[in-house]
Image (cartoon, rainbow, N blue to C red):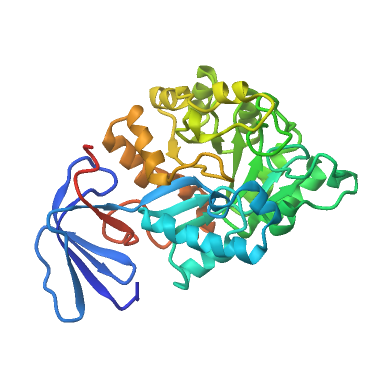
Length: 392
């Protein structure tokens, strides 16, 4: 929106992203920020755009705490073999689709989306606000190692994979490789570390093995801290989660194999859980051990239930990626109704996710205003919806 533009959304019921009660009134926007939420109809002139909400609910735009803007619109073969111009063209289209589905802010948990973010922020293309993580840093034979089985590992003199060359992944081994790789990723807001293996993405990483050693984890955490931000870790199993927490990782992604003691430990350490409500048909499992993966991850609802039980800071994300976990973000958000009341689900996907986003401190690209709420001074990212999302 042009900074000189004034807009008034009239006759709306406001869900502010926090409180359960809806407030009938009007929302005044100047430029890209909300300046007033009032029960009194403000005066308007010819230079003011008026949108009659006709009694609809005005709510903050939805957010996705674990998105892959580039990965969500490509299969793995397409990412590894497709022309880079075509890949970016598809990513531009995916960004617009994400916005039009009601998601106005996302935390991209792995991928070279800095240019996409810049184009969106400049108004060149439509899309959500993006908190980028950059390339997903992984050890050899880990979650982000997309080399072929016959390739020589880069640690042994092999050439970088296509994923590494386009900035989707970065393979690093040992402290001497991991720290500079993490620093290279700090163009964005988060360092992105793989801390536990699974056989759901690359050809190597099995679900039950914990691949990162304690001596290496702090290198990423320290490098991120030097830039005033934090590390998120893609990890499923108990051992990997504990290693990540001990190293100082502050956001655990996925964690579908977390047991009760591990969830309680996350609460004690004030760790964020950024998880996804997967179901069994989200993945076709072209792997040697589909039963293990399906039973262990997809359809496992316990981490979400336990996080609610113990009061763990929990964020909502989708992780639609590389042809896996099909569907669209709104469909994934609807699944939260299995675990919580509607008000809890919409609060999680608005103001709660925004609390996680703010952990990147002064590197927050949208630090000028709050996200995920409707209040004076906040970014004017909101939706007009039929019905009451806090009730249904």
